[in-house]
Amino acid sequence: MLHSSFRPNPFAGVLLFALSLAVPAGIAQNSVVIYPEGFSRGVATLSTPAGDFVASGDMRQVVHPNGEVESWLVFHFKDGSIDSDDTVFTQKGRFRLVRDHHIQKGHSFPHPEDTTIDVPAGTVREIVSGGDGQKFTVKHVDFPANIANGMLTTAIKNMPDAAQEADVTYYSDGRLVRLEIFHEGTGKYWVAQRQFSAKRYVVKIKIGGLAGMVAPLLGKQPQDLHAWYMEGEPPLMLRIDSQLYAQGPVWRFELAGPAWHAAGARGQ
Image (cartoon, rainbow, N blue to C red; front, top):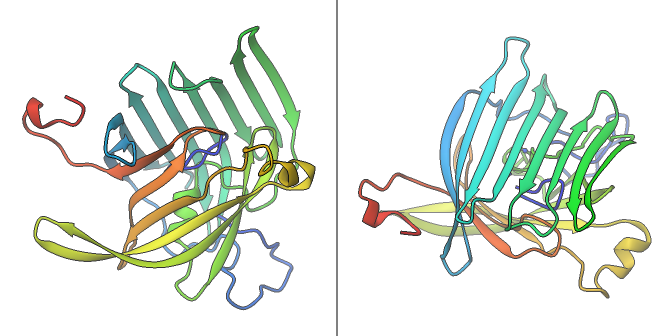
């Protein structure tokens, strides 16, 4: 669910090691497709850890005739704010990001933004809104093969069971950061009276250089992301606890079902 401002998308995936390098034991291989993506549709909610409703989400994914996969995730907030992510990637043996367009606007976001990552062109286009108006920038970025904006949930989903950890790279706040993904055991959940088991993952955000050294001292170190996936094949993402932007609150992303009466809808 992490995006250009340390957001989850919920929600996809590639791993840090170059194809020409040997992969150490226990580390997931780079972006190998275990579960190919296809056509899908779903709904979700954002809430506080205490369960207070924040936003409702729509998820949609299609496969284009050229083989590219395009996924959309849009959250509609109670206050009218929007968090929208449109991601295009390929999956010919390995996942490869093509482009990611992420928009955050409205009162829920202190620094609204519109960011487009174009991997083949090696460019990032950003429109950031602030007190002095909008600032538009275009910069060149040498993206690694494992750039995974908008694809973190797919990266986790395709992490082999035998791998103890995996890495992906994200573009966030003007820099490339490393996301370390670890298995965190299992947990139980219930659907009606039936009990199921979920795999738990933790994602740690590693900021490189001097910024990474001072971030914890300044209280700017992003919090860990926690994810739960239904066990079995294919794995199903159930829940992610994450920040949607730097220094933002932790919100809970969960799959949702319909409420057939308005009085039963969350947030009513």
